Image 1 (cartoon, rainbow, N blue to C red):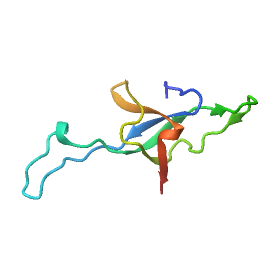
Image 2 (image 1 turned 180 degrees about the vertical axis):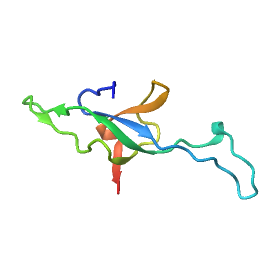
Image 3 (image 1 turned 90 degrees about the vertical axis):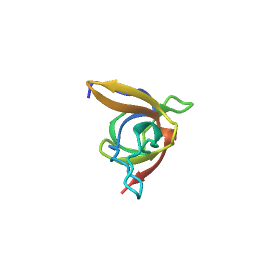
Length: 96
């Protein structure tokens, strides 16, 4: 991975969207779909620092599937793939 997050940030690859159809068979266009809020952690930063300068480790690790806030993070395109760079506080849960 060429993208190494700093501090308490993580890089997440959003889950792929499946083609959405209504019960009657109409295809819903991409502009009308909601973005997925689940993805896989690709890279993890070293963690934030406390008031004494000690590192606070990030609670997730590479490979975890996570649920994140709807409008959180910064979208980044790298080598044709889309990623999200999120702060650890924008992560809501680890999906098992």
